[in-house]
Amino acid sequence: MANKKRAFITGISGQDGSYLTELLLDKGYEVAGLVRRNAALDLGNINEIKDEVKVYYGDLHSPESIALALLDFKPDEIYNLAALSSPLGSFSDKLGAIMVTGVGALHVFERAKRVVPDAKIYQASTSEMFGVPKQVPQNEDTPFNPANPYAAAKEFAHRMATIARNDRKEPQFISCGILFNHESPRRGLNFVTRKITAAVAVIKNNRKEGIPLNEIGEPIVKNGKVKLGDLDAKRDWGYAPDYVELMWMVLQQDKADDFVAATGEMHTVGEFADEAFSVVGLNWKDYVETDPHFVPPVQTGPLTGDASKAKKVLGWEPKTKFKDLVRIMVHADLAKFS
Ligand code: NAP
Image (cartoon, rainbow, N blue to C red; front, side):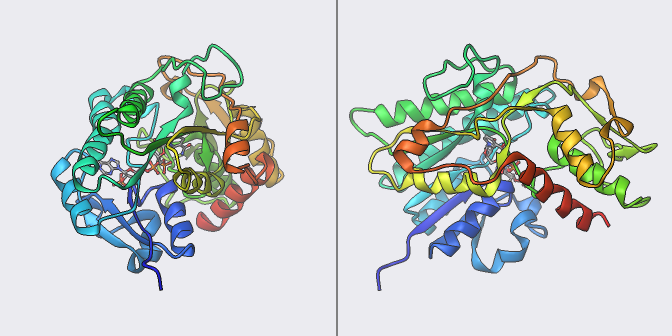
């Protein structure tokens, strides 16, 4: 029997890392991932499947930890998903954003080049790099115009990936997925979609204790209301399990390249809240209030993607529609916060 393919995932315990792990295990891969030591007792989204993956303790801050893991595991494919992934949060930790999300990615590329030069690398780029875009919808040729430190760090990593790919002497196979927002019941509670669906569950279930906290340490539902930022912000929201399929497809190509993944449908935060509250028969306007704490100092958008290249070259298309995504998230939170 042929040897199993080996995939190494940074950020394996995050939303995408966990869905990607499940996908690759299903495809017969051996999977390993980099996990920060402070997560030793709680592996987050991969707790249920931790016996099926090899865990390496390390940090994108530490090139040594990346090199040692690569040396031991010798992956065929590397998925660099680790990041401080909150655009809003990056305003209060600009250096963290640059060092982990930007320089950390470069550490992965550089260590891989020395230790496993034939490994194919996927870099998790983001639609946030388009920032305040010059065209709508955005595709692989749309100029980047980042509007927050997270996006600027991701653009740095994206540019370094392109430079490594085009290196005439030692080209590296590094492909970037420019992914538009994708959500799921595993999305962090510091993201607006999940905050809304968790709030719907807390309110509908009349939960009084153990209410999850928002990013400023307050219960997400206080006095019967959930606080959100800009209700008119427009985003293109897909379902995370659909998007990790694209990550895998990108690395099955013979040539490294960049691909946009998006639904092509744009909705406001208000529309998301309307849809989520209506799943349980409530009117969102009775439960949502705005708070400037959750409005970024520099606004991004409108963001919506044109994924026709991914469809043509990879045969990739998002399967899950907006209403179904909202329904999946609300029902998962109704069970979680019962
Ligand atoms: P996520 O749930 O926030 O996961 C991020 C992961 O990175 C977590 O496992 C986290 O570990 C890890 N991490 C953070 N700092 C680290 C460090 N210093 N060293 C090692 N690991 C570290 O994010 P996601 O939604 O799965 O997204 C995956 C990737 O895609 C990210 O790079 C994100 O920026 C990018 N992306 C996401 C979207 C989206 O809509 N979800 C769109 C475009 C691009 P801890 O649990 O220990 O914090």
